[in-house]
Length: 192
Image (tube, rainbow, N blue to C red; front, top):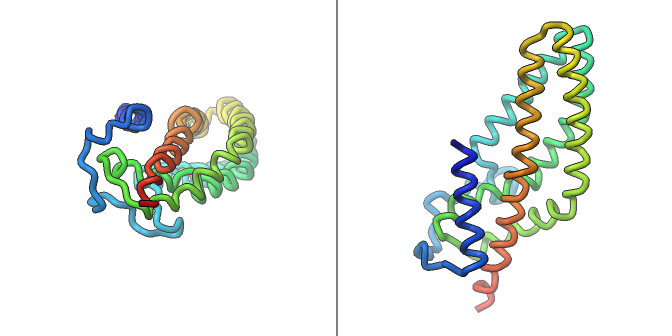
């Protein structure tokens, strides 16, 4: 369901970028759904993503205490996953806080501050994707250990996190970058 919504929103943003269909939505400088200010500046990570990351972090913390090979593999995974999540929270996910407003055709010049984040994400994409390879390797070890120890929660977590990483590569990061491209396109309105 969330993937379908994300896909529809991405299509709308691409259509507006490519075809200038600004008339699809009335332009407005108000923000009924504007992101609240947080530690990320004026852009807040969508609540659903915050909850998902918190759940993944909590589940991994439990697995690190599982002992045996599963616990060791979970600790190794945590050592590569935690710094990656910090980067995502710093600059990859906050741009998504603009998604609802932009999909409703809303834009104002304060949104151009997101370009610092999306430009950083664009520059760091090779590193982010390399980290995903490291995470995948650690996940493979965790899944193997959990499977051999008949730890169903460990296997389930490994599968869920693998899907999460694919979603980030195929939807989340491209959407954040697309938001940056869209805001750059709209930024010419700010110089009038």
